[in-house]
Length: 269
Image (cartoon, rainbow, N blue to C red; front, top):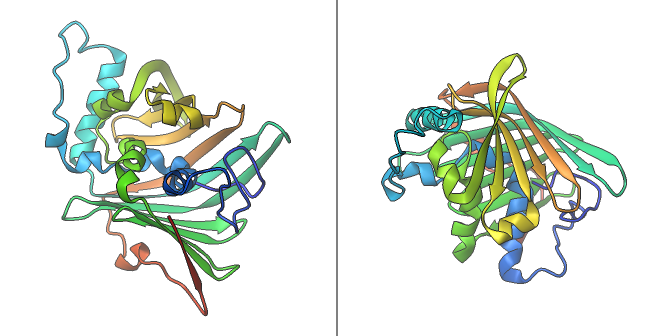
């Protein structure tokens, strides 16, 4: 999720991947979250095992509420999810310098036969980068400097995966385990009627990074077309997804890190 080229509160120079002042154990999760924040609403490892989070029955007086209607639609879409791909635009606004940095590219997700959700990101501009997330490990390849940074979330995998509860392939009612959710009305996004949901993180650790998250959901498809992440500093990021394809066949090599020439590998803790 490090898609801003300038330094900010949670961002460092992209080529360094350093976060001074952060303990080694927290660093792997922090770096992963910085890379994955625009992607949070696309996949979830929680959706791979619905039995782990049995759906609680909603009182009949609440079943027809707008929020529950949206969450029920997302639940239904999650049961059919196998893969997703889309074009993206990520805009990072930094209040201190009053500037916005933008990255564009393509993103892919698939759920394997073993229930694992894999993610691949091809950032095409302004600088080419590849991000791969599988088996709790994140790899970031930067062709410009010939370097691959690898991060194994290890014991912190559950903490990271709590961020991956949302979006393509996720159950709507799982949102309520990690967020206080509020239905904020319906809005058009790219000509599609979406449900606007405001999410306030329950975890203090998450709240330190994002005090509020807003998502615009095409609930019928279980697709989040747009998200906005508000940071305590006043910075925010907007993630916009277009040309979304669900359950189409994605080539196997998309989920392999394709490097060229001499590449240096740096492993983070």
